[in-house]
Length: 113
Image 1 (cartoon, rainbow, N blue to C red):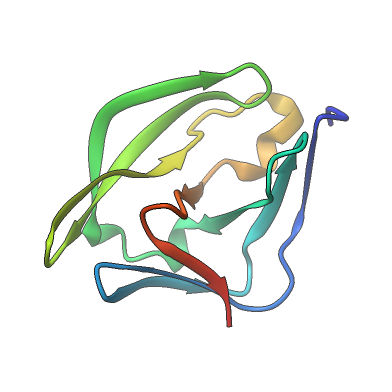
Image 2: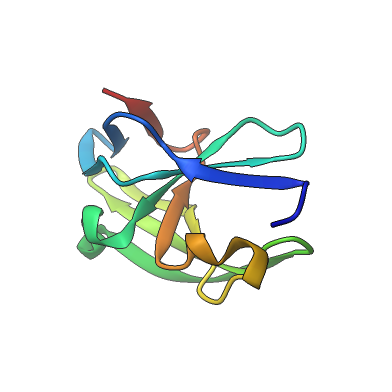
């Protein structure tokens, strides 16, 4: 794996909340640290209420992780646009995050419980 990125199991139980609802809870989350950025918690899709996620046309590319696709969250208050991202086919160095979702903490609450 690149020296720029480290991935490890996130200890404890993690929860993600949006629009007043719990979208998921996991004891199998991963913590990804990239350079000097704060760690990001990646949740397994199986632990997220996928019915609340709406695919977006937004994409981005990271030189270390690959191409990301985005989702909005259907909340009671309306769509929370591009609040979630996923690397559907990540680069081999970060293959562990395939099938996982990450959330913008500026748009939702991600916390250890």
